[in-house]
Image (cartoon, rainbow, N blue to C red; front, side, top):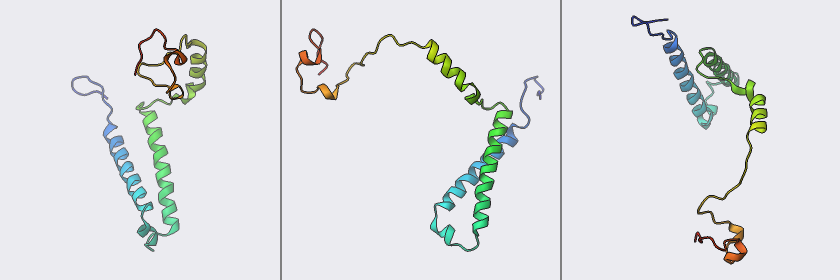
Length: 125
């Protein structure tokens, strides 16, 4: 949709943001309750109700992921994972491995400079 200036905006963004906030609050509240012994001792919450809360949280979390993908708020790169892996394996080539400055190889501590291969180099110690 466009506003008076002609700038495009998503008219459902506020609705999604409110949903995301409510879901986050519900998830945090449920997490707090499930970590409390008194929640399980309270007989007004049956096992079926607790199971329903967990199921609802799972459902709405998946719904949030779907809504974010549909609104193009996130991109699911998993469909490209294999292609990216092949591209990196084929195109990225290492030419040299260097230790960064200031590294003290533990297995060489206490050895002489010659034994450590530092002859002619400035000692980092």
